[in-house]
Image (tube, rainbow, N blue to C red; front, top):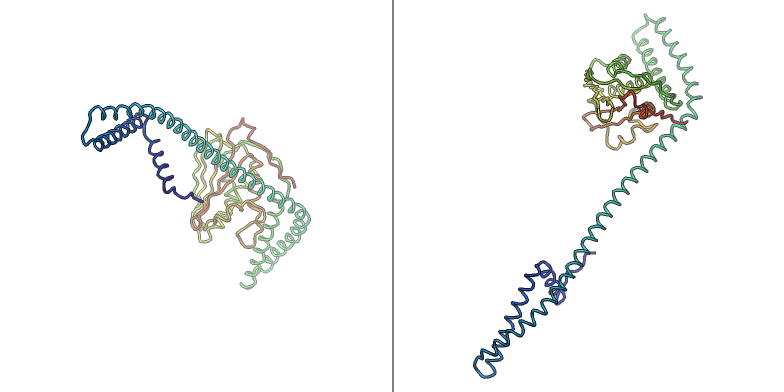
Length: 360
């Protein structure tokens, strides 16, 4: 609670002391000597006049000189006292400033440690989910993939046999084929996320070639324009080509699916020579991602899409980390999203390439 402002005599004395502390030593001395002399003259003149009705020069002189000398002594003591008081005030202010800086430093460290703990907790939760997926993926995934393959072959056979069937029959066969493809993609995501990440087979790969090969495997709608900006002078990156193609395929596919009404997909890359890294950016002009969802994007089983299990970006993070890189996202709702993949570009720096194997 704030302190009540001082009032009365104590408040007046406090304000007087504060005012004196703001004056220099010579100002304080001059002020008190002037006050002492003026008061002494007034007292001497008053007493002399009231005593015999006239002024005595010798009495006035003695009445001024004596308090002046006494004032010098008092002023000296007062100046010494004010000096010590000023030092104490300065020391107290310095101590308060030091305590304030210490508190601010502690608050910053607490926030940093809290953030680190939250990140560790999120990583533990992510790995725990992957472990749970691993317990069911081998049995459920493979058991589902086999009948789905049989169903897909059956639909293919029916489409050939019933090539002359009416339009409604062909339409329903196409719907069945699309639904089987969606189910197979979900099973593939499940197996990819739950399976043990293999150690990457590192090679020096050109970024432009890697992106072009990945784009060749993507189904780009006619309503989407793809723009690439990858400098010819960009250094090669040291990665597993197959794993990174899977990473970029997931990110490009997500960007295409985010632009349901068409738009622009921009793929660019740039080099940080100081950090010896290459950053590949994949930007779409889709609906964007809300701030509350961005922190959960790379968590297994989290998705904002219907009929998905939310494993694609978990695979992206696992494979990127396995290749010694990192992945991040920036997004503005209604304006699109940009995913960043940062990878090493230094052929000789094997220290950055760590095999981030996720134990299942």
